[in-house]
Amino acid sequence: MKILIADDEAPIRDWFAYVLTQKIPGLKAQVETAAGGLEALEKMEKDPPDVVFADIKMPGLDGIGHIEQAKERFPRTVFVILTNHAEFTFAQRAVGLGVYDYLLKSEITAEKVAQTLADIQKGFFTAAPQPAGAGEVERIEEPEGVDWPALARRLGADRPGRYRAVAVRGADRGAVLQRRLPDTPLTPVLWGDCWEALLPAGAAGFPGWEPPFAVGLSAPHAGVEGLQAALQEAVGSLNTAFLSGRPGLYRWGDCQEPPQLSGALHALRKRLSTEIAYGGVSAIRGDLSQFLTRCAQADPTRVDWVRKNCHRLLAQMEDRYLQELREIEPDARRVGKPVRSLEDFRAQMEEMLAAVEERQGERDVPAIDTAVRYIERHYGDSALSLTKLAGSVHLSPEYFCRLFKQKTGVSYGTYLTTYRLTRARELICTTDLKMAEVARQVGYENASYFSRLYKKHMGLSPEQERRAAPPAGQN
Image (cartoon, rainbow, N blue to C red; front, side, top):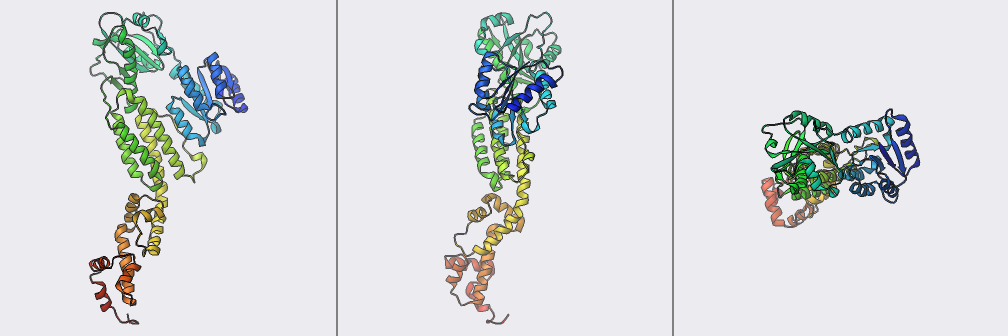
């Protein structure tokens, strides 16, 4: 296995070289090192590696830039990011580029490196299954460089009749598919990390078949001109397993993208940018649910779009989450994990929303106490509003209203009106102020409106209240 270590810190490069050549039994590795992204690209051009361990922060061309460029030129290379806790947003961006995994620099051990490489070998470099009597498996490194007519002849796609392409991820699953369909002629081909095959269209209906793994099935095609489309459709159909997170047969054309998908994404991103700090967790959950519903119906051609935006949303959520929970210890921060399915994305989002909600619960009681004291000091301000009061305790107006009623038993408006009229009654009964002045001092510029409101809530008009009041000095 050829491995490249790209890191600007010499001790990290030296440690990796030592571990990979001396500390992992059975690993036969050719190890190269590079002190930056540009040097790493130059070395990859000369001798493409199987695996790259890349530091996410490097001078010049950083790990993200390196991966963005390298992925296009070397699609079969597997990338692992080396990261620190504070670099989550960059790490999430790397996930969207197809990075296999992360290793935290503060937690790297020889055992973790060994396990990561073992997982990579199992998932990416296992020998492909070969049906009995078949020739050598065709490997497609880059679709742009394939001789499609020659490949069609080898696969039998140039013969009369229609065919479908079928795809599974992982060579071991391809072998299982071969065993489960012993009477169906399959011709395997490896494209990227998918094991694919062609088979007669009539045999590809699989009525009632529920495989224990994900399978992508293309639409029927015929002739040389249909081969590339068939293979691409099989991969696209297989990718829709990301949406459900479940095994099964995924057919090209089964899903149709709802027109509201982009709108649901925009609404959720806007909500995340404003609501976390102001207690709008329930509002975020509503928009998240709508986004997930739209995503679950996405067309196979948009699954990569869905996957990448899930990573971006997690990065945005993580930024807001860390701002809200900035008092937690650094080693308690959740570092982004690869998203394996839409359900995995939902679970990670919910994990952070629940943590924010718990933290806000600890903060909310004193916030309402503070708001009540604010009312007591500023009730005479005619411009006192819900927006101003909620802002004084850093909550959104919607969330503040719900929380205020939950904590006090009455709505914000009722509490403010009752408090103002109670203070007005004191002024009416203990002073000779004109009613217009009493109204002004408790926050009402319109004396007529104040009089009507007072009678409605107190049962007497202000004048009747004053006449009924006991003389000064009497209770």
